[in-house]
Image 1 (spheres, rainbow over the protein chains, first blue to last red):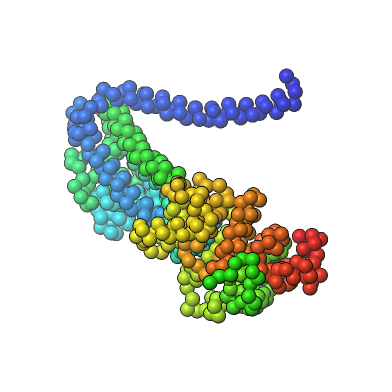
Image 2 (tube, rainbow over the protein chains, first blue to last red):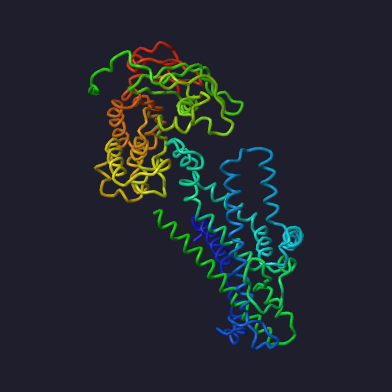
Length: 285
Length: 264
């Protein structure tokens, strides 16, 4: 039993158990959260809840403006942050020379990814709402969220571009491709799955953000859905926060139901992106 | 119009590539010292030497791939049909369509099928109609002696082929662009002996049409495939002559030591 082989095996097993625990623990906590929230919110979940406007009466209140507002924000944030972020990553990774300047930019981007979201909210308020006169609009909110996720999009996209082997770029150059043709037809197709993963993570972060939107001026009681870029708006987390802060118990149930809607929306978004990614990968093999 | 491979090439052949006083650097490290060489048209020229002697740098300076590396620099003249490839009005992109390259490790594009890999060089730069594309694919694959093995799986992934087939696919990809010169940077070093001998046979056939420069660390290979051989040592061109003469009666002591296996 106490052979050298057996002794060599027990750290192996211990590590296996440890990593299994690291997987199960967060999953378990998430499950408990979902069960608790689902249990108290299930009574309020209905088509009506999703298609109704907020109300003073908890039983009649719905999540529609928050849901539509969040979808607007997500769409606009993606439209703004993804081209900018991927473009910046391409520039830094494919065109940028190793210089003091590029290292400085690199460090700054990494730092920006760690700046608290409330700071982005204040920046958004000063820059988009006031200086650029966007007002407290859904566009100003989306611009702020785009700024917030931009560093993450850049970092993840660079990482994805870096995984494309240098030998493939050389193969393209040797065939007489220009730099742009090489990027467009060889590098990007290989990096797309990684870039999409980054996009998923970034947007998942943006959809849960509350603080910067409050600062930018999202409303908490809205009885309409945005009808344009300049419309006032609210978002799911803000609506949930609003309900949680009410004293009546019935509103707490609304909040729980709202959380279920938020998580479901996130799942749909992520599911779509994962589907797109696997389709891209299948096309390759 | 071409002589069979067994006939010795007529001499002197016209000069396809001229290398004049070429120095090359990586950062502050000088890796080539005043190389002078002339490469004969429709012949195979081998560059041999121990690892790190600068043979890859030399071949990469011929299609201006060297300058793509960070901190890389080059001085001197390289001429293609008499025109300086480092001249002010030369576009390296257009140059590389005349001077194709095959790399050490087979590197087909993973996202593309066999067919798309062959067409990659043309697709990158312009659009093709389907019939013309089919012709090019067949001609290039036949040229690379791969057609019979892959004609039924043209739409399969390029990475699904064996290592040797992948390397011939890379050769077909280079041929599809219709270059005049083919540079091969240790094309067989990642392949088994059978695959290696097929590529060597292929080189024999290709030299009827193309000027070939091959870098190899395998002296037997240089002796088998090339008409001329250059021996590089620590960035210096030690000896450059007809392959036969270099291997049977080298003029320089260092060449003799290297080919008899005293170092390297």
